[in-house]
Amino acid sequence: MTDAGISNKADPLSKPQSKYDYSKGPEPLEINMKWCKACNICIALCPKQVFEPDRDGKPVQARPENCTQCTICWVHCPDLAITSNYK
Amino acid sequence: MATATTSEKAKQKSDIFLKYLRPRKGMPSVWCAGCGNGIVMTAIIRAIDKLGLSKDNIVMVSGIGCSSRMPIYLDFNALHTTHGRALPFATGVKFARPDLKVIVVTGDGDALAIGGNHFIHACRRNIDITAILINNNIYGMTGGQGSPTTPSAAFSTTTPYGNAEKHFDPSALAAASGASYVARSTVYHATAMEKLIGEAISHRGFSLVEAVSNCHTYYGRLNRQGDPVTMINSFKEKSVQVTKAKKMSPEELKGKIVIGKLHEVDTTEFCDVYQSTVDRLDGRK
Ligand SMILES: Cc1ncc(C[n+]2csc(CCOP(=O)(O)OP(=O)(O)O)c2C)c(N)n1
Ligand code: SF4
Ligand code: SF4
Ligand code: SF4
Image (cartoon, rainbow over all chains, first blue to last red; front, side, top):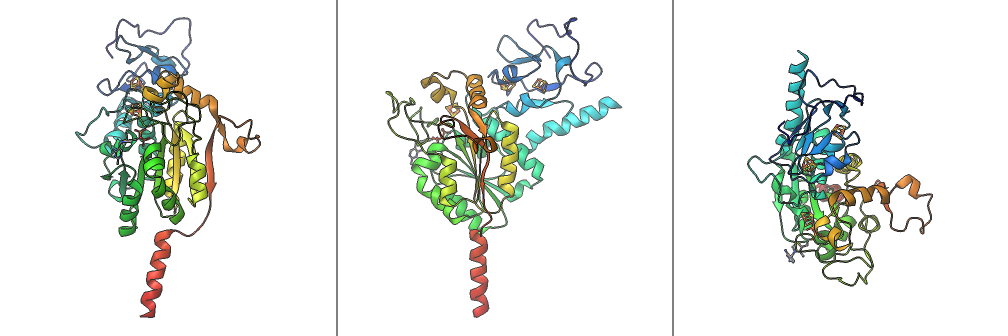
């Protein structure tokens, strides 16, 4: 994913919280930037702070290792822009 | 090999949207960023996918409003009709083709203001139609006029000093009018909504799912509830599960949204009764 200067590296102080290992496969989620309207819902509702907004307000997976595939972001995306790569 | 299965799974998963959206039609939708209509739409997609129904056996009927634009995006048989008249058109479709699943998507203005009479009579007949009423407490499409579900004292462009009227409770109205399945959920409770929509579609008889939703553009702005996230989170705070609500007093329930399956009765369905009347008269000939 292209981003606006947000590091995709894990914060060394926080342990990965997810049982999924994303190091070998694709990112946890597929985000369709063409459909996303930057409503902020996924960013605000994610309980694991996986996303950071890019400069347009669209979600970037800044802390992918935290994603537990809990479904919250994609069931609440009003624009069908998020799908999981794992579930 | 693990990555191959993962990407296969990913493909299947993203196909669920591609499968149910009309090719080349309109996505991204016309709805405002963060509009709850889209959250209800994905709940409907997932519910139908879980039920494993064929797209060709589903007819989606709507009237006019932001919410009523949904059949434009979904790849079912569709009728986008006139304001308030989705239920009469749907009744005709169901009556002519009782083998089809008929789903109506309607707004609070569409179903309860201009379409109020059609709504109570569809409930009374208990015809096998599933109505999904997206209740955002306001007329979204036409610029934020008050609707029959705009709460007392709430602001809209037609109630600039606070609504002097009382509001309808759509679920209570449906149950009192004869609907045999009534449930309510909010866009915060999107997974529960998916389950209730699935139950409603499977139910034989008139079923209503009231989907409490955010029109932050008008209702939110005029009532100082701000952005979609604030509104969606407020639904979480205001909601009470029906089991818990039964133990609460009317005062405690003031301003709360009771969610879950509210009403279900086992009673005769209109098309069945009509068919048995036809059979009886045929036998007499
Ligand atoms: C006969 C007729 N009267 C009025 C209108 C104008 N009109 C279009 S949509 C609408 C209200 C829609 O409100 P609601 O059903 O709550 O849907 P929402 O836009 O909030 O989803 C009105 C009054 C119309 N299209 N046709
Ligand atoms: S699936 Fe859950 S944990 Fe993962 S990004 Fe979405 S909301 Fe966050
Ligand atoms: S919820 Fe969907 S539309 Fe809204 S910011 Fe996230 S991806 Fe974009
Ligand atoms: S005006 Fe309101 S109901 Fe219509 S699309 Fe915008 S937020 Fe949704």
